[in-house]
Length: 171
Image 1 (spheres, rainbow, N blue to C red):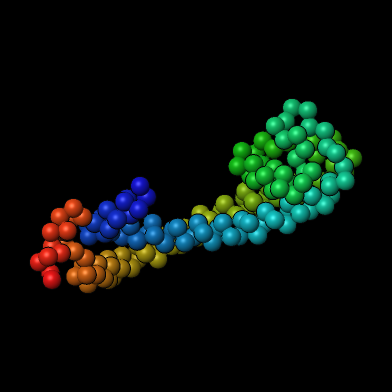
Image 2: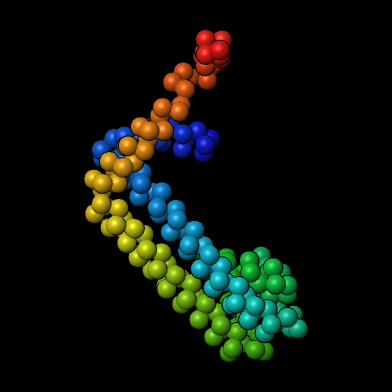
């Protein structure tokens, strides 16, 4: 389905209003990929810190869907990822543990870093990409149209069921 959408979305590049927006969406996916790499580079150290702090302690989480949120490294990763997404992490487990001060410090530092700084960085990079493409809108549109026209010579103009009839003619 995604491949069919992207194939038909090439037609939208010919329209003067939608062509630059298609270019912006292509560049924004690059920004999202960069953000994902930076987010993983932030998530892994904080997960490692929480795991090393609590790997030898069994945390009691009474009303939790995480039976042991930091017992294994994979659980710690999912615990912090879910805390990023819904902000309803099992903070009670960490708060009531015997190493609560340092554990909560790590959690607060992670939330400040992940939510405030990384989300603002993603918004700023997307805005910068939008400004770059929007300022060079006419040139980008002209070059993309020229590139599509040059590549159109290589494409068979017949739709897939009818292109079989062209085979004997081209021989």
